[in-house]
Length: 226
Length: 318
Image (cartoon, rainbow over all chains, first blue to last red; front, side, top):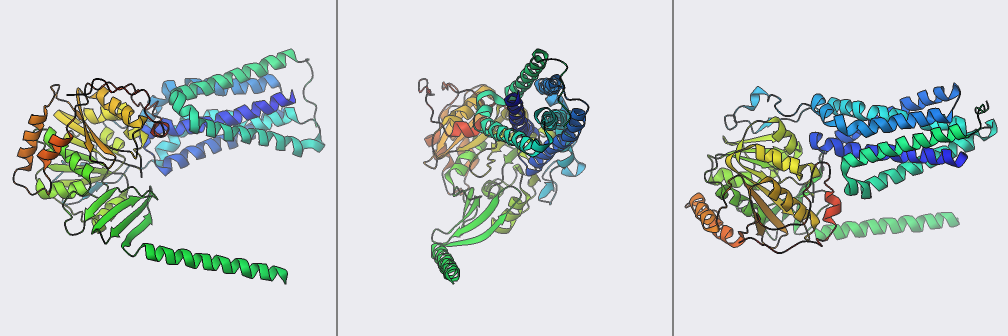
């Protein structure tokens, strides 16, 4: 049970960073490889984690159940799984490229003495918007996992520090492996869309396993109040 | 007391080491003069004069790779071999009027084209505003009636602009590599869609060794254009791939003849027809067992590290 929870936060942490790496690849064709793009996407993920942590902690105090944790993970997985289906539409909507009218001062070219005729569009709001719409919800849902798990994992007040420490350690090691694995191998092996889909499947599968584990475990035994 | 001694010894060693490095750096730069060295939003941009060679070079980041090179006594001349090969694209098109260059570098091609064909309209897309400024300050880039510079990501510009071109020259490098979104089939198709009838796209590929990325990129061009050509630009590790909309192949003799006409009696400082005759290779029918790059699947960095294993040499063009 307890090692299962550690594995859960480990996988959730790995999946989160894998999604973050995939998000860079997903938007680069539209937005280019600008530091503004990376900064925006990282902020969106951190924002999702922050909101998720608050909500996850509150939800856990209402009576933690393993199947609810499983449902959260499965929902995050389902969103990720369907993401490639609408990502292009969202990019196009937030940052209409083709056919967008050119500013009048561009002229026909060759008519102006001005050498530099145009500065790049402001990428800050479009990247924050695209990031939030596409990855805000998965990041939020995955952000609930660690505080929620803490309530299931820690049974005695005297061990809160140890328990939280173990969970954060497992989650962060998962994040490291998710980042390196994606950057070094997965992007090259499966491409961006399959990477998103695989993460979705992993999370849905993990959610189902937790739900089944809850179903098989003795009933009527919510985690004791600490 | 003991601690103080250790401290003094360590501090002394550090100071001596620092002095040694500084002295070493001084002697190393006797013939090199750094004119500009600053972080831009994208790179560390350096302009270095190599006094014994009479050259001024543009470097990005720590890479020793040369983005651009200019002969100080003759700034118009195309110094890097590949930039001469890129100009051959103008000859592949019969009569270019509108040309787009993606990636300004040290402005060699704009200087050259403005001098020799001032009536060809040239648009340049460059992502880094500092590079534009550096070109104006150090690489003799001047405003001209037929030249305009757009500061934007190359792909973003092509998508937003509906302007079409006779020739598109792709030379966008982030230090030593092409950003993946400027190498994929979707991008090459976008460039193709911005060509006028009979248009041509030429792309500079630089690699220090032959690797799988080379072939994946050649395959990408093959899949997008009815006719493709491949010029090996000397021994610098540059190759230039040409994609042409014209469904009929352009024989070597025809390309050489157009190069002669294009050069006319201009003093280009090199023979464009001879270059075409030397480097001409047909790519269209070359069988390449590599998958093309796509936005979804463009493992540029992985492919660059791998040697081509299953490359078939059979069926080399005429």
